[in-house]
Length: 625
Image (cartoon, rainbow, N blue to C red):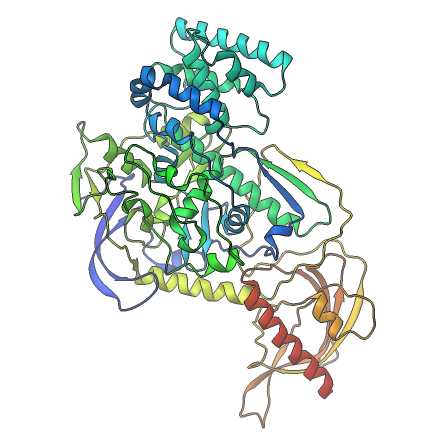
């Protein structure tokens, strides 16, 4: 049978193994498409090799999560006053759970958000952990935000004259409120709450959309939300989930970019983010047991976020270490676990696997699951992002294979929405058992293991330099275009400008066994603290980066072991800690020089340990000469 080009699933016999390793098993497995047939067709995973943040709580970048809005009692009262009258409309339009979710407050754990953002890869819109790949998905938008993946586009136009007249009235009301008050959200609530106005419902939904769903950095009622509010008030279902997730992906990419840039610059920057990042924290709390507080007991009528309402963050000494060591405890399918004893599971969490026919009678919950697990474009109000669930299939209880390339359909808003809203081409949907623990193919396991090995070779001993306390603040609050800049592992960027040069001579012979030098230049960072211990003057030193080029010379008397002979290496320190000029004088008298930029990485403790060993060996080599 020829599979349709947009098929979601494929089933075949494969050699499968646990993502943590073990004995492989040959069995029938199910995969999300597209996948590739050979490891040779894949590049390494898009691992994060940018500078690692040494102290998350002492960043030069000041991040303000403007979209993380606190619920106030007036809002709860407004919800309660309209609940009995409009709850059926909210359920029809698919926003009942989302409105209920907005009544709960989530206390922010900023170090956790920043630690996750450090792992973010904008190229794949996934977190790249040392133990696997994961991301915030459309299913998370449903479970944690209460948003629908089904329905019309958020940019849908108004279709009747009555709707257009209501739109004009809302625009006029917004102008009146905004003329006198800057904090228009608060005054908007005061103006419409309990007013008995025939437009109170539309005003209520406009407030909800502007504060909780599509918040801006400015606390105002956004006029672009009025058409959405008018349609929702009439029971029209709107697919809010892809739009919200698109905004989260966009701001995660912007945050990652600014985190990387902040430790390379001497200026303090301020970054204002408008996406609802509380959903990212809830995603982490559901999955990282060591990083979450103990959830509270909730009733059957309460949404899942209620179990985290007003809970304080747990005290974690090293958030990064907790994330890096979470492979064994990571909860791939947290929503398969009941939040209370009366918890009602959606229909795609059955006890046994099943194949469901795709036809006009397909249940809406199962159709929603199908949209959660297929690749698509996510159209937001101001952005378009790519959604790649086939890279994180285990989050849906589905086995993981080598993820294939997915073409973009983001040429226009219309094309992006058509790609998201396309028909399901599979004749049947596979629904995995609720408690099934997915595996990975052996080729995926080998690919990931090789990639992790390459990652460790590429990332060498990065330590950030001290920050200048005299910084000029720079504020970013708007979306940055073309921020999806990615540097693949083991890559080096040529540096363009260098000054403030100081030279240090390093002589000696280092055994390959003691200090491995790849065929590519080997980066070795020396921190300011360790520079003082070997300094020949009292002045504080900046970081050094040694990238020696070496020859393989067979050394008799050392059991034939090949050694790397560093005959005369000069390391020139420059103003930027990762831009280094290296002069190498070889045995034949020839000299060469070049400049490289070191790409720092992860796991601070391990890097410092390796750094200490490297410095000790260098000192010993110098002493022997």
